[in-house]
Length: 259
Image (cartoon, rainbow, N blue to C red; front, top):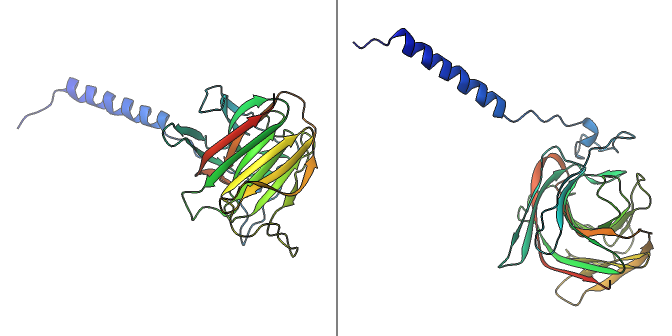
């Protein structure tokens, strides 16, 4: 029977120890999710983050399609990603993030700096039909890339809820104008929107929609919000799950700017 020499055994032991250390160093750290960031459920109510809570936005100034850069606004516990299909002209955004609401946000953002009057529209598709109801795909205009920035956003939820929401000042709670599911009031639209848009004219921001392929039209009254120039215009997605990604696909993206 062949017997291994002590030198060979020692070398093998060193290789095993080195491999174990390498694997341990490359293992993903356990993600700790704060209780306030847990999604709402039958047994849990999501609440605003603690006062003064922030995470620095992660940004890559890498162009993608018509956009100048990409950011994980609010640095969700799991990093997001983005891609662009030149042939189909579709943007795919993968993102975690507990919410785009309250006094700060977590979402993946494709953006371009603009000034003046702007119109942005896109078709929205969620590949996973079983995703969380409150996930949000949106067209959004923000003052900055900070997680608590002033902003106006037209968002389509996984459940079909459509609204225009805005943060009136940096770090303040969001306000909203719903286009459907209006808690006992007549809905302004019915069914699930396929194409959504946002229009900025001066300090006026309005929600636009096409439900069944008809020309886009304004729904509801505009809101007033002042943004200094330049500001950020783009598309974004939030899974509404703090440590789990989901996917949204944006197609037929149209950006019009008078400046």
